[in-house]
Length: 367
Image 1 (cartoon, rainbow, N blue to C red):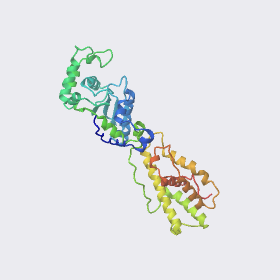
Image 2 (cartoon, rainbow, N blue to C red):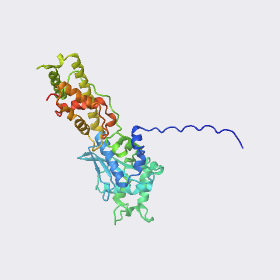
Image 3 (tube, helix red, strand yellow):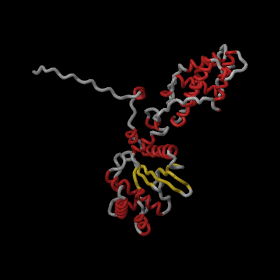
Image 4 (spheres, rainbow, N blue to C red):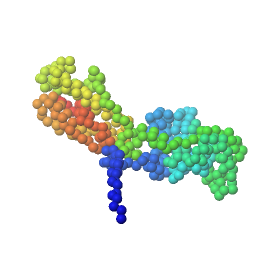
């Protein structure tokens, strides 16, 4: 028997986990999650992407409409560039377990040709297949060759020897043969408008919207900006809380009048720190506008801070300056955990919210 010692076993590398993963478990890869959607969930996701990214963020369209279902005339998601005259693009959803093959596309292309020929729908500038597993190599090659794509469609449409001929699938109970003016139309149809939209592009673009976290988890994905810095002089949006601070300083010094230019050194520094905190909170507020998924709002945070400090604000402090400091000190110790913004909030943020509340006249330093 050999007595050669076994080599030491290397320690397995630790998983690369974020704080969110540790607290909630690792999130599923978004492409795998998309593949798990039902037909209706998949169409709803593509509608969200089209509305949130293509319309709202990129401004490419002015309206997004979902027509998926019976009677959609081969259009699931229609994105309008203008309504009068109608100029639009179409995204056709195909949720299958495998990449799309040519056989998955013929009926949709036949509907596109038939319905635009009959002027039942407007001719889109772009017609794109969108599928969880994208298009397969055979369909991809056809999409790269519009002339061959047309030829193959005509062959499939005119083939009546198969069990379910294409001409019998367009309209239930009818046989739409490819001949006459319809054949002429298809022979002249510009099939270069037919393309595909890769799913990884859809997910990458959707990641830029406020709805990504609600769909796929992992926390807010939009990069958080550096804290805004206060301008040299208060803006019109600051006047209420700045005046409230001056009232607190007057109350502390027992002076009937006092302005920023005559503040003692310690109060001048307090004033500057207060403005920095206010703008720190303003950074969070503006970030939240474009980043928070429904139903969360920035007001959830401000209300939580208010509930935490209002009893302190209501106590009979000797002066307004003491009241400000007691409230600000308590706010700096807060930790709010019921908001997607939790990971971005810091002591200065909570303290700045107090000045926002004073700006909204919900907190008062001098009673």
